[in-house]
Length: 206
Image 1 (cartoon, rainbow, N blue to C red):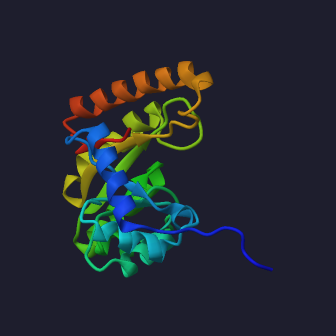
Image 2 (cartoon, helix red, strand yellow):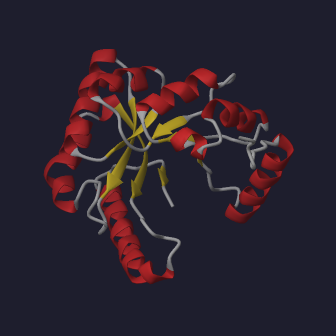
Image 3 (cartoon, rainbow, N blue to C red):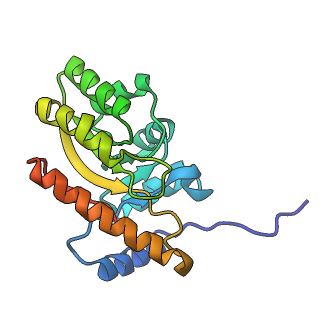
């Protein structure tokens, strides 16, 4: 059977698109290029090196540690990589050793990250995911004060707080406007709580 469609990857077209996004976002915004799901079907090992070759891509994001390893191995020059989803305890050591950033969505992962960083004598690059109303993933306010803040205060030498993030599902749909507006308010309030605890995340995800 003859194929009726194909995907063509063009470095020139990609550079044009990146330039457009950077102008829209502004120079003070770091754009992370998400390549989960095999680069959304484009082929991770094909797309990522092409994107990196434009010289414009400064950050990649993936879903899992497995994807992070594939991405790390196919890049000619290192580019920061962030794991937004699944990472097993055994993969934490690999991530920390290779300067891979990762989401911390619960207290257990934070405890394991600190423990592993101490064993390796190297800081973990963490992004704290906050629960702001989607009720799917992330640390809620009660856990922040009861467990997360005390852990972060007591073990500053074993992590670098790269960022804060949350799950804004359905942000493209105007029907979710009220919920998303409330989530933004909660997120801003929780970020202020970090600052009041003398914990200063490097960035906030949007």
